[in-house]
Image (tube, rainbow, N blue to C red; front, side):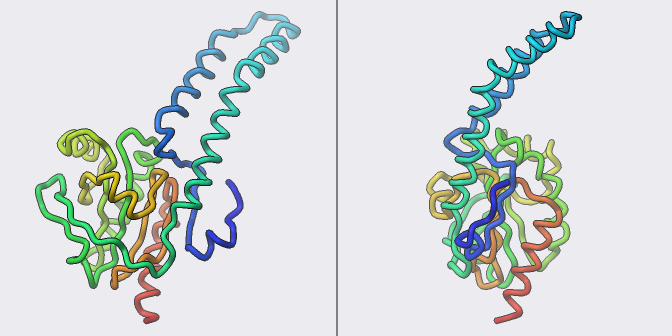
Length: 227
């Protein structure tokens, strides 16, 4: 976890340790697989000296993979710092069709707290945070709405099947790369919370916890009542 800079605090950014840069969506999985395969090939030869030699060879061979993983993570945090919308920014308006066939218009959500979650089915931390988002969706009730905006290129029907398996009971829709660009989303998952006036209140880059989501929603609610 990198320290949060002053600039990030001004943007009300929270960065999780589990992020997937959009430009590197597949590299981390390949690196992990390579390290695991090499570790499995180097079984115990019995003698302690042999074990030490094995460990040394593993460190040498795994080194590039470890460095690559660190670089990908660091790049993700760097992008996260650049990809935050300042607090108080009017959220770009958009309309999408959800997997259930209903129209979702951000403009029509005025008067409600809105949680926008940018995710993808190929993103492990996105899948891991699905139960948190679902609990948050249920807790919002009629006073708010949470929508999952998928950056998958697969048909919405395929994404919907993944969402159902993950227990997502909240609306999901496909988001274009242009929409992600308008919201400065460069890392997945990214969650942006809007107040009842449609203004950005806070952003969370990376996998959400229940506490983070509850705090973000409470902050948006407090910002509304402070007006």
